[in-house]
Length: 295
Ligand SMILES: [Zn+2]
Ligand SMILES: [Zn+2]
Image 1 (cartoon, helix red, strand yellow):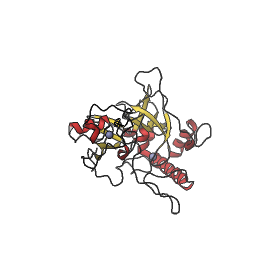
Image 2: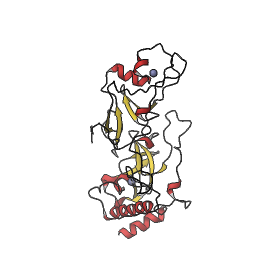
Image 3: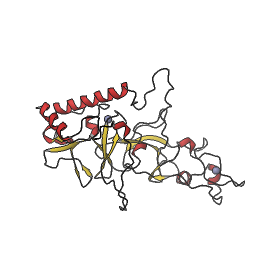
Image 4: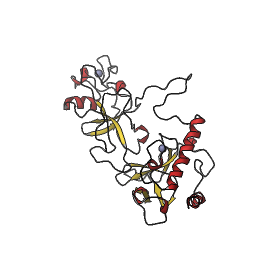
């Protein structure tokens, strides 16, 4: 039965690891396609990408909670997919259920060889998972993929420690994407010499934020497929301290509200789909934070 199923999969889809145009998926990094006339800027269609954990091709969709959903790029015969793992696409939105048709989609996470095997996988899915694992092995052998947190081979330059280049920060009840690593976020105030202040917002004499793993959508229970995100949480600091961070000012210039800003602050409202490449799912190395809010 499984051979037939995979023959059917191949007959309706491209071969695993290769695209319709025959190119390798790892060369296809495209920007998100957004409907320019849409005020909500919803993702109009699926976008291809690579799983950061295993290097295999995935399709991104927006879920019903507006969460990013990573699906296996090909449809599968519904009969081969346990009900709990079925997804379907309706009007560009990913729904965690089948739609009654003989074909369905599946979350990449269910098949991702970098994660534990979910329970109750059918034989066809087990084999598909093995094929993805094989593809990961090929990418590793070709040097085309480096698993997260893994150091480069001996003799080459070691990878820098895990430190998000653009961390996600919870402050004043909102979630933002920073433009620089936490330690490098710079005061925006103008000094009396007419130059931009050189001080950093993070100050040794002030209480620091805490790295923690939390749900993708702030203050909401986990949504499928559940993804944890590492955030730098400033929410436990005094309100004035949080305002100082939000205004992007050093402790000195927080005390001089009349000092003009020399630059605009760099905070961007965090969007889990648009900013998905900045979603860190592990705490930075050496982070003081403890995992909280696990699903
Ligand atoms: Zn994966
Ligand atoms: Zn300053």
